[in-house]
Image (cartoon, rainbow, N blue to C red):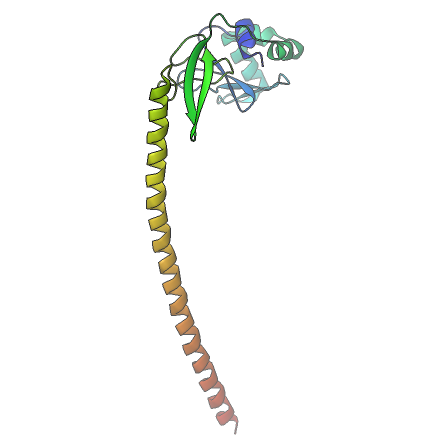
Length: 189
């Protein structure tokens, strides 16, 4: 995916360009997904801009090259093969997997070669550091699951207690129904 080619052709340096869920995202440090561009060149805005005219006006003022580009030019840029000036190894993790990626520049708000926005607390050129982060994250998750198990067991115990109380009430109610039916028969006689 040519996210970098797209950035170089259509976006100024005021904006962060990254890839998320297959879309190219254009954003700011506060909101990195202000605009999403699909691989088909369709644009969607996360901005509170009402109507297509207002969105185009925003693009013309802030991203004039993108506003002037045809859908065909956008798709061609996205389909282009990106080239990078440097290949710095950087590590991150997903669950228990340590992932090796490459980037041109370390740190936030820079992006890996595959378009992932790097944050300081989840990316590092130090693999051992990322392994420690992944381990701490997994341990924290395990502790959370123990707490959640305890909460669910307590909830289940209460449900069982309520079910048993309902069972007793059902038996008592069945006895009352039987007694009332007998009384009703006696009243008819």
